[in-house]
Image 1 (cartoon, helix red, strand yellow):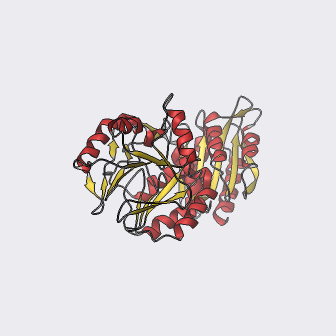
Image 2: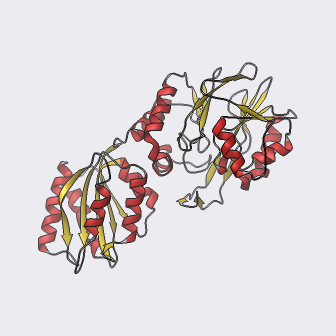
Amino acid sequence: MGVFNVTGAVKYVGVDDKDLDLFESQYDVPNGMAYNSYVIIDEKVAVMDSVDASKTDEWLKNLDEALEGKKPDYLVIDHVEPDHSGSIMAFVNKYPEAELIGNAKTFQMLEQFFEGVSFDGKKVTVKEGDEITLGSHTLTFIMAAMVHWPEVMVTYEKSEGILFSADAFGKFGTLDTDEDWACEARRYYFNIVGKYGMQVQALLKKAAALDIKMILALHGPLLTENLDYYIGLYDTWSSYKPEGRGITVAYASIHGNTKKAALELAEMLKAKGAEKVSLFDLSRDDIAEAVEDSFRYDRLVLMASSYDAGVFPPMEYLLLKLKAKTYRNRTVAIVENGSWAPSAGRVIKSYVDTFKDIDLIEPVITIRSSLNNDTRAQLEELADKLVKA
C-alpha cells in the first residue's frame, strides 16, 4: 500500500507480500501477508520494527519517502522473528548512527540470526516499564514474553494512545484485503499464538491499564475503531472459551466410507437443530481452518479410519496440532472405522485424554467398513447427545 499517515506524526512504511503462498512454510495465505512497520517522527525519529528480508528494498524505499531526508535515531525491535527482523542488517548498514531498542532476550536472539555480527555500541536495552522520550511522544515498553516468542515486547506511545502490539491482534492477508477481520485473525491466533493463552491473558491485563486508542499490529489492518470488539475476541480466544455454539465434524477417510458416515452425521445434526455444523475433510481441507473451528465452537466430532494399527495420518496431524495448541474446555465425540481390527478410536482417545477439561461423549462408535442399520442408529443417538450437549 506504500507510505501513508496513520496520525500526524506516525507513518506506515510496511509492505505487502502478495506472492507468498505459505506463511511460516505451512499456513495457506491466498490473500498474501502484510509485514507492518511504522515511523514516529518527532524531535527524535523511531522506526517500529523492520520487515521480511524478501521485502528489504521496498521497505527501505518506503523509509526514505517517509523520513523526507531525516535520519532515524532508533529502531525499536518488538519481535525478532525473521519476518520482522529480516531487514535489520540492511537498516544498520544504511543508518549506522541509529540505535537499536530491545530487551536482553531481543539482542541474545538477534545475534543468533546474524552470524558473526555484534550490535555492541548500538544497543539500548529496556525492561518492563522503561520509557524513552522522542519529544512530544513517549514510548513505554511492556514485556510480552511468549506472545508468542520469549523476547516479545509491545510498545505503548502515551501521547496518542497507540499500542504497537507486535504479533498480537495480527491476521493473515495484506492491508488492502477486503474481508472480515475476525475470520483470518482467528485462524492466525489459534494456529500461531494459541498455545500461549495464559501469556496473552497476562498481556491483556497490562493493556487494560492503558488508554489505548489505536492498535498497530505487525500483520494485518490498523485497528482504530471498536477496540472493545477486538480485545473482547482476544480475551475469549486466550481464555479457551468457545466463541459460539456449534459442532465441528472432522473426518479422515481412506476410501470414502468414513466420509459418507460424516456426511450423514452432519445432516442428522442439522435436522436436529444444531446451531452450526462445520465439516472438514482432513485429507483435503486446510488443517489450519480445522484447528480454527475446533476452537471456535464448543463441540468436536473426530471420525477416522484405522491405518497401520493406528489412525489414518491426516487425523493424527489434526490431533498433534490440537495438543500443541492446548485444546481444552470442549465436548468431544469419537467415531472410528476399521474392517478387521479397529484401532483409530484408541489412538484418538489417547490424544483426547491429554486435553484438559474435556467432556467425552461415550461410547466410541465403531463402524465396520461401512454404515449399516445398527451403526446408523448409533450415529442418530450420538447426534441427539451432541445437540443437547
